[in-house]
Image (cartoon, rainbow, N blue to C red; front, side):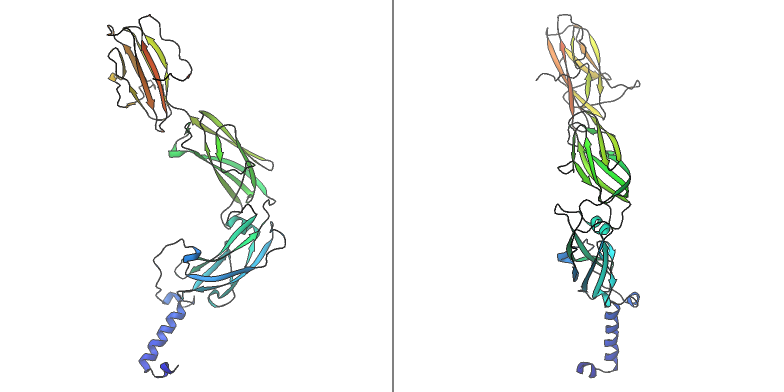
Length: 374
């Protein structure tokens, strides 16, 4: 006070301006006229690096909080940079400002907001956070608490659907099991918190609990649509059926799983001068190699295959064709060539073709029996 009294008129005017600026940083009415020095960090921020400190308090409910119930939460907030706090949210619910700049605040938080704001632990507890938004638009969590909730709420699911998200905009996954599909279970109505049983008749679903169920969750503040995401993979080619059930609702979807490239026929014995066509199957682009042999050659559009992979393209008839040809006058009485084809997922299929002098015709395809070791 004595310092102010010793100032001249210009000093008093400057001090007053500084005081107004400081108050403006904490007051909504004057904030637009004050230049704010906002931090450059974009977040998201954690409790330990928050610029806002404060407290959170509530009376724990005598029984686990259930649907339709709520708790009254109160607390304090202080901005370390002296800026205005525009809003305080608890589990997504807006708090009421009880004192200047949310020095004290209260919020009525519903069960639905709590269970959709964060995962429910195995102990049926949900961690709720108090988050403040300041004049710079920065969101700072500053306090947290734990609420015990009913882990099996009374839900009312109107519809249940399953969506399949394949990798790389394809319509299948490989049978290697290395590249999965994402399975999204969606419920509408009062679906948040619904416990859905999910099963597959082949392959593996990851993300289920020990009982084969998953809990649908909704974004904070939303209750009408809730979702859960699972991961599916399979080591067997074919079509897997995914089934989800909750209450009297049932949904199903098919997941296509493709195996490695196929060669048909996979084995053949050729006499001198004989040639056969081999059809190459595969759901993706296919590249093939062949072991070199002067008596038994493999070509694609008259280009010989070698140990360097060659792209096998589809002809005008919609086929991918290799031609295996035995020399008219071979150097050896018997020899063999091995063809190996791989797809975009690294899956490998192959075939073996033999030159023999017994005059045997090419045998029928063996239907996928494993080829012998080279």
